[in-house]
Length: 107
Image (cartoon, rainbow, N blue to C red; front, top):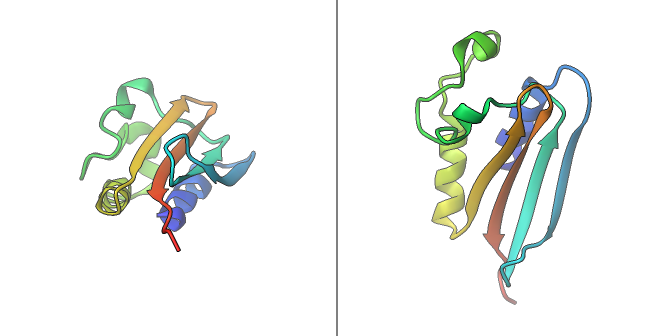
């Protein structure tokens, strides 16, 4: 999941910054991971369908980068199979933040 989200951040950030952070989640016994970038961002109308299978973003903006829209859908499936949650926040032409939570294994 982290690898896929970082790959997307690198692919869509021509210049600027990419950050990976983790912290305890507001939900007890979960960790929250965030990958943020200052890349091209995502249009608001695309955010609702972002994690749907075979739904690449606006083709005019993403065509040079390729892909068929599977990566984020796979990430969602993996996160949800482990009992977590995944979501994104973005402003077009300003960047994106992808978050996911996963339960922390008790020792």
